[in-house]
Image 1 (tube, rainbow, N blue to C red):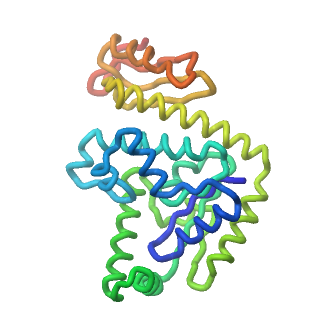
Image 2: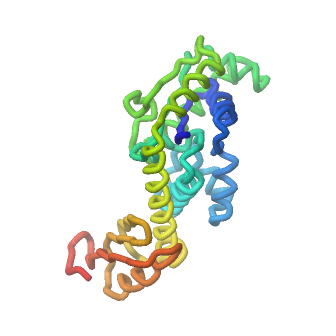
Image 3: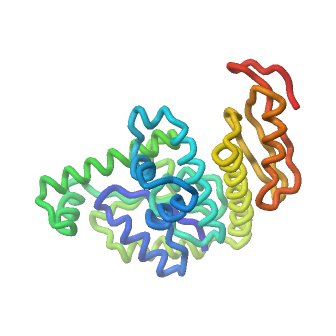
Length: 273
């Protein structure tokens, strides 16, 4: 059907719309529970997940390699879970991660802050002042998460295909429009999206394996895949590390490795293997 990513202000009915849309389309619903479960299997412990999930990391956490490991694994999980190109992704920077993938629709849900506070107060049994604080804090965290991890303005309407104000629009109305749009996407576009997602997921697996399993000191590592071929770029301090990276990249069906990692120190390249 499509890959539909939904960004949402707190209290704008984001989860309700995403869940109902996935049910209507028979699509895979990718939310926090799915992401948390997959990240756990990849070794991202609960403390790290809580520190990074839809929030800007604290100052000291942002200086560690835990940030790099988290975003590598987050990309791997989302690309892998979305491989069938029939899914609804709730939050987690999906509008940026999937923006170049064919068959992707990016959506943002908004509503006036006063109304969102009233909704949260009702659903979570809070007084209105507490609910307004929750709305403000969650929105601030989500904006910080997108800015830190994806260098984007979470509220920028140009990063979305559609923005819905749920002040008057019902959940059913929004779901109906989105379902119609998803069903109108050509199969060729969806097929291209599935191919790209397979390559993106495989590239993240290789990158994670080199950096966080083998723990090779390759800086600015970038992995791209085209079927069973992987291309590696980055900087290492020795030819031995480069060769280790080349050999370690033969995972997940990779048959050919084009290693373009360069030898360098403090940004000065000394040669290429």
